[in-house]
Length: 108
Image 1 (cartoon, rainbow, N blue to C red):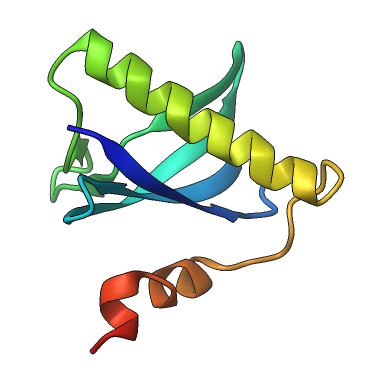
Image 2 (tube, rainbow, N blue to C red):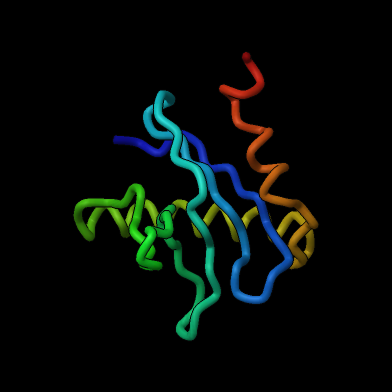
């Protein structure tokens, strides 16, 4: 598995820093990863859904630590590069902007 594209959608919120979309092997998309500012620094949260009992469950996630490490490194590098473009300030974008810019929505 190769992460062939990382799309970064910075947001201006306290702890949430960006929404991320990744494309795997040029044929599978995973949306709604999040870059979060935590106590020990930035980390990547996997896409999740709130269940009826109020508990959040990951929708998609790596099955081992090696894959998680590779994915987190690639996502954080892309996020930091995007932020550098704007002099350390996140441009104002919404999640709706992120949704509309995926390749499969543009082709159909």
